[in-house]
Amino acid sequence: MVHQKPVVLDFVGSHSTGKTTCINHVKVLLNRLGFLYKEVPSTSRTEADDMFPKDKLYHEVGDFLQAWISMTNWANILESIHGYEFTLCTDLGVRSLAYTLSSPKTNTKTEIAHKKMVDFFNSPLFLSSVDVYRIYLPIEFDIVPDGIRTLDNDFHKHFDQNLRYIFKTCRIPVIQLSGSIDQRNQQLEDLITRICTNRCTLEYKPGSLKPEARDCQTWEGECN
View 1 (cartoon, helix red, strand yellow):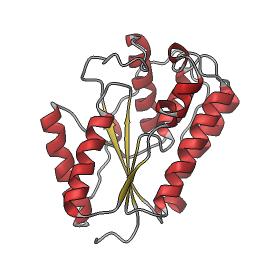
View 2: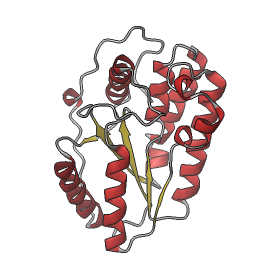
View 3: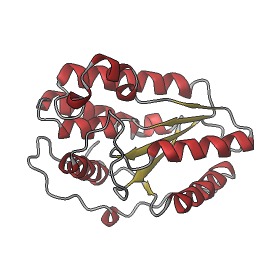
View 4: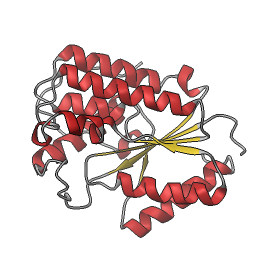
């Protein structure tokens, strides 16, 4: 492998945007290329689903539950980074902060704490030892009922708005995938090829993702 640093592929998007589908395709690609990887499932899709009512998981997540989910996700991701060439995940800070902003049950202190973690995962210190590629999946498909994900389209859209707000405000470089599943798969194949040949240069245009109006803004300014 040309890259000496471990690689994190963080798939960021609202529910039913194709994150799991994309991760499954990347796993096939990495198996074919012979790289050592680990998929880190979101805690909210594993342990938390067995502990809390499904209809409460998105709308009524409070400060304690959000902190527990976030810290568990981050700990699992950091553990994977130390043992694998590729880590595939969906929560390297941005989605956690978006959930915190989207839930009416969390307070400003919890939002600020999550923002600090986004700062850390986007800091020169962290990025000096880990190559992070954030892959943004916009809302393009209908919500698939699975007994876990909320069918509330307003929450779906509001969460996506918060994601884009975080990308812009925190100046986080993102790679946007779009189109059909086959088109996304082709884009992923191109990305993996570029990463593995050490020619992937990510150009972020701040105007490419414009934040939409939010109900309220509890923290302002740019991330450090």
